[in-house]
Image: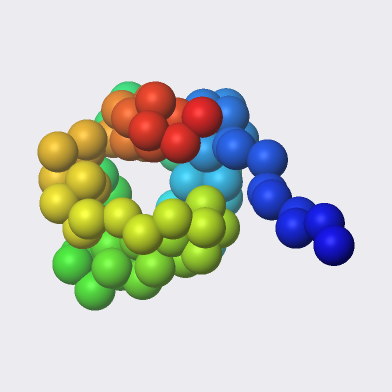
Length: 87
């Protein structure tokens, strides 16, 4: 019996996923998302952040500490860190 393991996500895949999720959560166009812009500037409140984190955990197949979004407060920083952890 073969167990299927999911291929780790690249930093670019993580960035693209986060951009799409931010655009959906905030009802804005993906092209309007700046990956260097702090999450606070997008008015991402704590409830939206937790929803996003839950979706990210499911997508990555990994449990994440909620503090990660505060320690890496931009899409670029967060995706880079997650890429380091899970590649």
